[in-house]
Length: 308
Image: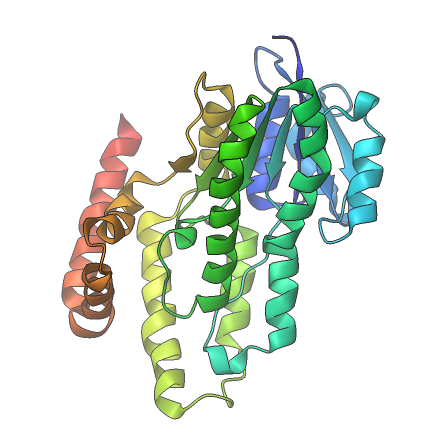
């Protein structure tokens, strides 16, 4: 098949950095990576991770997913505008009570998480159609499948991503273009750490006292337990993303964390939605001891899997 050009967004840290570095260091040298970020001043971590592949198998370029002109300029700079594989990864997070989130902040989040992805796909899709080949890989989330307490807006953006890609995938197939949604659960990154750090200092004066207490005393400790028990590394997600890219028949959806699958499976088990709703409610508000014991069991399973 020859060397395939991969455009990856959001490469200054976390999953995007790990995906770009892993593809660039591919032992079979199957990829030429165009690793992009909004602020080139943050390129140092990627340069270090890329090592000897920098400027050979990996090139760093500026791209702001919130700006059509920036996206076009980056794609136009590539020979024949050829992007064989798009990895749309750039994203931002938001957690907290709805009353404490401004509509402006919600729009900004959607501008990156949804419209940023849509702008990228809109730019590369016509060329992929013309060449009758391509693979669109979008970094989604398990929260694009199952909503989670105090993640209303972030989850909504990922639901939008899922609906967009599921709809587009049918048309794309006609042009021999593959579509994959990569759906990580909790991932231990600087991105996540910053989101939760900001949440602990969040001004909760716009919401009622009980909701503020639930957020501080139930949700934040609950989230820390989840990350400790189920959290993956960016490198693990990157490895699975590469497996999806190199698969002969890539799936439409790929959840990277098997330990999280029982949570998302509840949704498909009951079309009325009552089962997951009741399960999450009881898990969070009624049975903290059972929840903690379950996470302990999952942590043990994870350690055993890791030793194999």
